[in-house]
Length: 447
Image 1 (cartoon, helix red, strand yellow):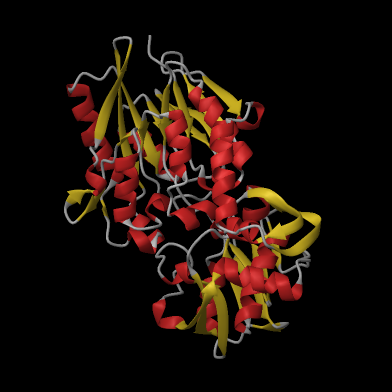
Image 2 (spheres, helix red, strand yellow):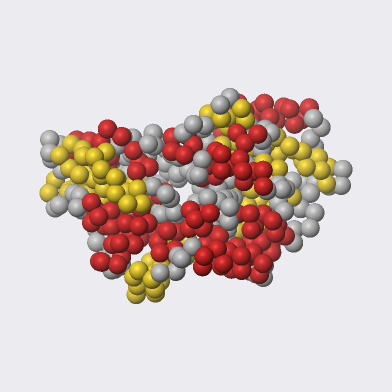
């Protein structure tokens, strides 16, 4: 009988809520003979990861002693050298079949490994989204090869090495379907997308536990059954929770910079379904800091998590945009700005769902009709003039990404300001936190 697998992924800012991280630790530590497997983005991003360069994850790893993991794009947020140090320090086996640095496998990891339980050999390999060097500036020196080709080779080697089952640890997002169709692996344990998933594609099981450490999935390779565990129903591992609390206190992240009277949600629904209060707050802060015509924030750059409610601290705002990236200012023609706005809808990105909306804006009003695309765009209350020049304040990441808002690139940048969360904190101190949904984005489905 095959051992079960506890699948977790995209823990990201779970460490910023020490009690939840402690509950997650208890759940994973009490798994018995089950295999604990992580499918990426389990060291970063987050508030504490910015302070510790990802080392806060060791509080969890030391308590849980997981078995196997692969990389997500954010596991390189502090550069490949730091990633390699974390790999060396953690006891779990890291696998990655398609990531290289200077022609060597990144961090010296193997493409695959075999974990044995009671005479049953379960083979694991890892694959990363090949757009990662474009998605993450700190990963720009990596070479990420075709994940499907790497997966095919790794599966063949695992079968030849005697694996009874072969499992892909995938950080491909929507690419999991292609991987499953191109291989005969028994399961694809996925990540990179915040939504949960349990499905089958022919004989392959596909799972995804979502983000933020809220859910762990237990996968039975024999039956194909998947049990869902809600992390908050487990008791707190006080050792992990207290260690993370101490890290927060030592970093001085508890300064109150504003207050929210009505809870401000940060869920997948609020971030990717159009206009939201949290998106308006971020975009307004950018535009205010730069005195720009438009503020723009990509939806995926605002992290989901607990609602902002009551007193808001620096730590809370870091958790909203937990990246060491500045707000930057671009100059674009109106025609270029319209191209930016046209990229705000759709699921072409590897981590996106087909109906997702990708932009939060300030100073602009956009109307979108499915099937026809961008119907109208106004800035400062007036239609965008294709021949005019506009300033846009946005995250510096968008100047590097080849996937999101490709009309923006480095030639448009004219200034860099403070780091994103510092801009949010300054805005909150001076302007308060009281965003409203006011019709900046209007989405119309086809009849």
